[in-house]
Length: 209
Image 1 (cartoon, rainbow, N blue to C red):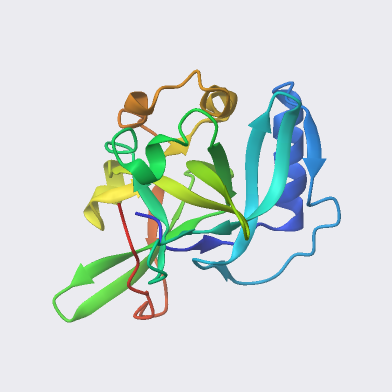
Image 2 (cartoon, rainbow, N blue to C red; image 1 turned 90 degrees about the horizontal axis):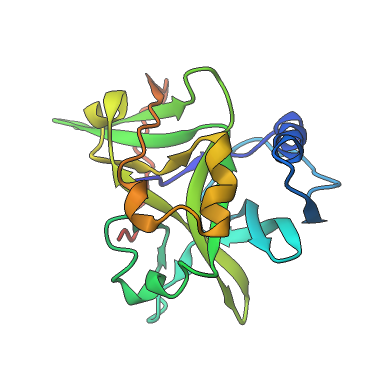
């Protein structure tokens, strides 16, 4: 799963723009031209940088993390890649609601006999992570979820799920619809996993699919 990740720095925002430019992808809307870096982590219901695409080009915009549940009791922050085609919450978004969520790193908690231990997960070469996601329009604005898959490599030692992470050359394939939902489960992007110094006992109970 992915229940929290880090706020991007100003330098990482600049790097993302350069990556998209090198892919010949044009940003037609950029909500982060005057980006103000904040220290800390992105929590569910926070707003965060998300990349979407239309026939005009790419939109680099500020969306709210989490689909508000129909009964108002919490939010859904993750979508399982194995079921997004059959879950009514997500199936209608596969054609026109794809997005990519950039992150410096994300966090996960390993269950222990006497509690849980917080870990941070990064690209093995310290590159920016690009996570596959879905977004939807609501009366209150756009909101997104991060797609997850079965954990592989070192990640499987602390949790059974992990975000679907795209390689740079897969960003447009996902956004444009060339990459099928079925292929997400087989992506083999491995990450590096490190324990955090704090106890990590502040993780919230989140709604997962």
